Image (tube, rainbow, N blue to C red):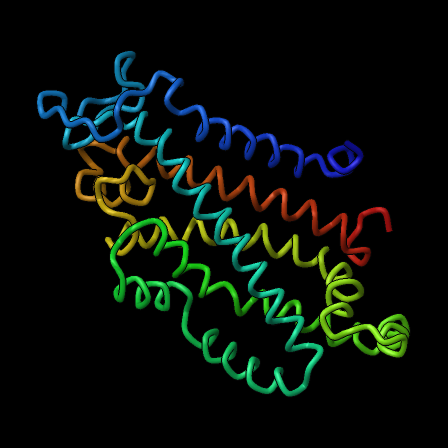
Length: 273
């Protein structure tokens, strides 16, 4: 509670993010219908009491598709953040502590970072079929280099510290030194980086779906909805408006939480100093 008292914007972000998670979990009980149910007779209806967010070109309820679409964005964002943090931490710790590993890992990570994230994700998706698992994998690969570089830099600064040298002198193994003495000190910047990866992953998923390289078209994701409505924007603006607002709200919520964590965990940026 002290964290939210010192960081009111982070509290707003946490509440907004909690609301998004609640919507994703409780979507079937929020007055929704089958998000894939087609009804040509009800196509392109404007927002009304019967259809809160209107209907799309196939007569599908936009409100229901928006509620279920929250699941896709949150699953992708959370899964990419978790996987990239775990894999990137392991590689970054090894690279920062061992010069032999570092020589190879650094070159590979530099090569991956030389390619823009979205282009690399599109190339990876072009090699596989469109589904949520492949989207998560493709985006994770684009985010791992950032985690590796962060953890590697922290490890490089810590491996010369006296407490690490003392652990090595006492006979601690390579794995034990990394797990017990270096990783805990890297958790603060790693958690902050994880929030930004989560937000970036949600945007990247929407971009991939928007250009047809993400989840299948029938899946109710916010990117798919905006892609379907772009040609009808002047006649049915609601098809793009509502999923766009929800995507922006989700990304804003995650970024606000990340900013709060950064200001709290980084003493150089703490407002109390």
